[in-house]
Image 1 (cartoon, rainbow, N blue to C red):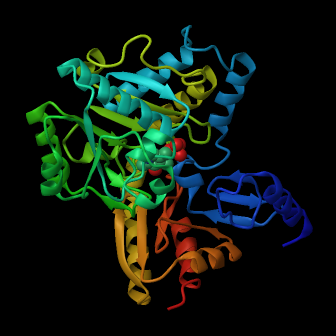
Image 2 (cartoon, protein in one colour):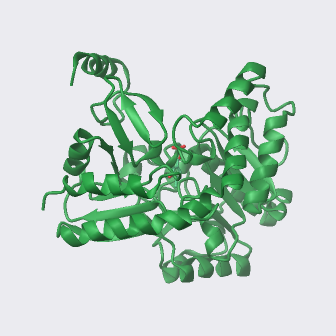
Image 3 (cartoon, rainbow, N blue to C red):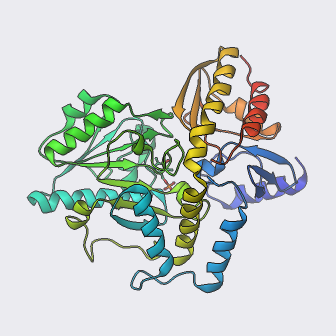
Length: 398
Ligand SMILES: *Cc1c(COP(=O)(O)O)cnc(C)c1O
């Protein structure tokens, strides 16, 4: 490493709060599915800023849209209407089949909104203030106190207890475990349609449909967190669309803005009419015209270019390539996931593989210590997958 990057890294370690063990590169610019560091080294990117840059880097149409909005108006507050938010909400409704949209600034904030929606829905139903939410073990929903409280990883929560309370954890893909936790106080069941950080595990059809049934029988809200697995990542605009069930409330973020920080929680008309009203919830920046101009353009491109269709078509190629690599390396014990959200489970920590790949110009990331996670830009092509597989193959030591 030359001096330019190491000087910046030294400065960063003296000023930024040390909440991440960062890889030792300073990224400078992106083009398509490639990133460049400050010293001009090129990297093939299979992380996409953690499932954010669905359309790749430096997409001209997208850049034009946010530049044009920057010239016009960045922010209004939610006391006034703005056209980009109205249009973005209309597109989200069409894409998701949900009826009501609330824009946030992040994924965690979308989860907070979903939790408040569920509690208010329960409160209006029976007047109780002791409602419970069932969340899943190995889930990840974000780092704010509410989102952390429903994150099924005790290690993330321990030092910050007590959380918001009245949360029960069930085992993912285990319907009996969910049933054992349901009672009169349950107002919502919350899960990722495909678990991301927890290990790239898709919900089984039996599980998701079974949970939907429980929710229908008892008027409990099904909240699906589509922050990572949504926006085309599994080959469907939203991952649940493959299952033939529909959530009552859902969350989105990450690829929704393709680089501009934005999230959303959405709900059906029924939930919208029986939950949050004026004064119940708000945000200063959420739904600002700048972020919504980005969302608008992203959704326009998604629909016009059938990004989800491209994933359905191309992801099996990644699947086969990773399967081949697994067969060659006994240290890889499992391959799982859906679409462009795949994981290779190793019998040992994957940090050495990631570091070696970085040296060779390939950006990869983990999910937990033993899983290599593949969440590339959705516009990735077969030749990029070949390039990745060639590099990766040489980085694994058994
Ligand atoms: C990333 C993520 C979040 C949190 O989103 P932030 O924007 O980091 O707050 C929540 N849920 C899932 C499934 C995620 O992958």
